[in-house]
Length: 206
Picture: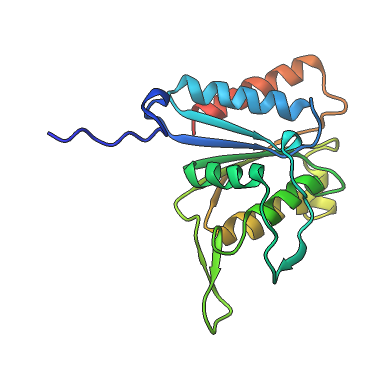
């Protein structure tokens, strides 16, 4: 009898779902770091394979210099990021909302990594394109200084829509759960601990 293929990247990693966490903040320490660790802990507790990309630790130019009209060579860290995205079945994109949107580092990362030929492919003589990362899902987790109702009511929640409606969907990655932790500026220690428990439970229920 043929042994079923393992889902993990290597036999030592196990056969759980392949999860990539993209930590989209340039800060070296933050609530987003703690939440991503808690999510990973919950997922690993259920046998899933979790890898983590801390964008603040990568070395790359976040500026797409000439759009996609010419080739901008990918740095080694971005080539590795592409390999990790291709490997993953599920992503967690986690970041703080700054000025109503995501940090420039995360925007630049997506602009540089999600290249034509990797994330999408234009069709000849057409305005349409093929989604090359189909079959993957994603959770979006954000932190805010303002109450969670404030951003959609006043600004229309651009920090979420940019990823869910424009970036991920355009590549074939289907957003699932949208989780907000707010307001963090006035949160008590008890509230933060409760958020960490929530993030761990979310990771356990991927």
